[in-house]
Length: 197
Image (cartoon, rainbow, N blue to C red; front, side, top):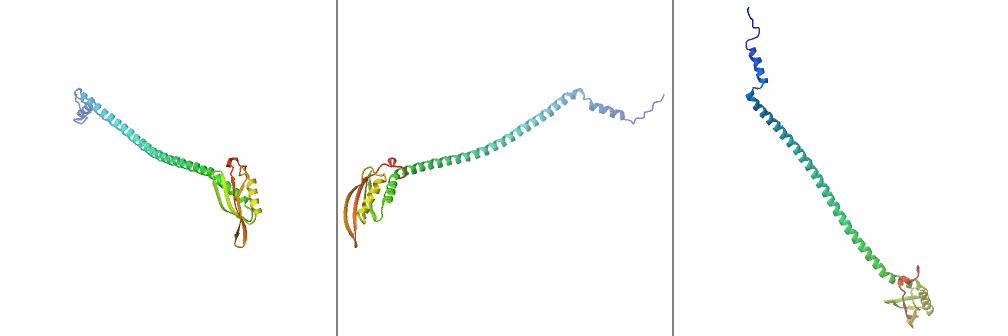
C-alpha cells in the first residue's frame, strides 16, 4: 500500500506550533501568572489613581465653590456691619434730636405764645428768661395796648401766676409819645400747659 501525503510538507509542524502557543508549557506557566498579576496590578493602580484624581478634582472644585461662597459671605458680613454701624449712628442722632426738641420745646412755646399775644401798636425790645422767670421789655403806643398784651399772656395758660408790670414810663420818640414798659411772669412747665394753646 502506498500512502500519498496530500498535505504540504511542514503543515503538520505548523499545526503543532499553534498548539504550542495555545497550551503554555509548564515551565512558562509561573511567568504567565506573574505577568497576568503584574498587568492586573497595573490596571488596579491606574484605576485607583484615576479615582483619586477624580476625587481630588471634585474636592478642588468644592473648595473653590466654598471659597467663593465664603468671600461672598464676608462681603455680606461687612455690609451688615456697616449697616449696623449706620443704624446705631442714626439712632444716636435721632435720640440727640429728640433731646434737643425736648429742651427747645419750652422756649419755642414761649416765643409762640408771646408772638400770638402781641397786639397792634406794641413791640418788644428784649425777652429774657432765667429758669422759669421771664422778663419782657418793650414799647407801646398806649397803655391799653400794654394791658391787652398782659391780658392775652395771662389767658394763654403758659404762665403760672399773674404777670406783673414792673415799670412803665412815658417816652418821646420823634414827635410821638410811647409807653416804655417791663413786665415779668413765671412760665409754666411745657408738660403742664394746656394742649393746643
